[in-house]
Image (cartoon, rainbow, N blue to C red):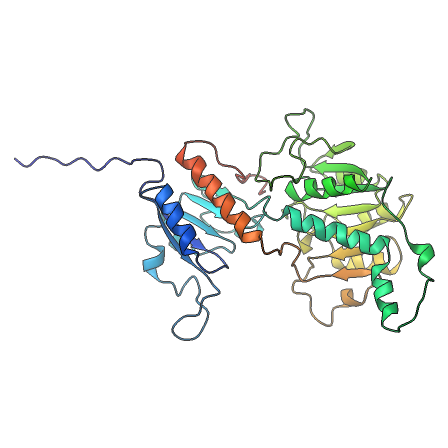
Length: 370
């Protein structure tokens, strides 16, 4: 009688996993070799939508074919892929800070599949974008740049210049981006007010254990002079009424946060002692665009810096381009040559935690979707 062979035992939790990386940068063979050597039995497949196929067109998730998707158990990507490509997937590492584009994906709805965000990989550069836009407004850089075109030594803008000490920044969302904004703003002498959906009454509840670039952020939650919380409109309205000089939208886009700034909220901001400057680096859907245009045209707010818009891309003929004192960039505040190095560091950190049987970082809250 033939002996029954027992299946080979896994040497570690990653042994036998297939990791599909569908990422913008082209594959890095040296990184793949190092990770596969560190976690024997883990196989990595890395392809990029920036690659060109034999037909001369950029490759797509569909054109990769079953040889790429078969057997995949771990996935890293930004945009959702078809659920049939993910039938064996147990863990998804997103490169985005939010998951609003995934909400209708069947795998996202599966509670047995772990989703982790790219939270923390964007914080340093996006905070610099926010503070850069604020300083540009405070010191009239845009106006001076326009005067430069005439070659005129014009000091007439001098009386409009201000600085930041003693002013107040309100952070609508106090994740990695909000915390780094707070760190830089504090260094400039600003007072920090933080808003979170859930209450943070204790030092432990104010800690942040997500991915963090060393030397950045506020991991212990020590910087805010005052904390606000709540998931209802009145709670947000109370926060907006706190005489904010700079309001930064840095929260995930969910059903409850869509249109969080509309006519009513701009009216509240207009009653602050000093006019509020609004910076949105989250999603365009947080702001009702027509109401923003009205707030800019009627002077209810001091101005706005927008890296995201609704609609997006913003059509060339859209009136938001011509609204007074608005600064718009095409969803690029996340950009830095160091971004993908940080994303790979996050991926490796979570692989190491899986290997050691430790909890993952940046795990998505599937109820609130952030």
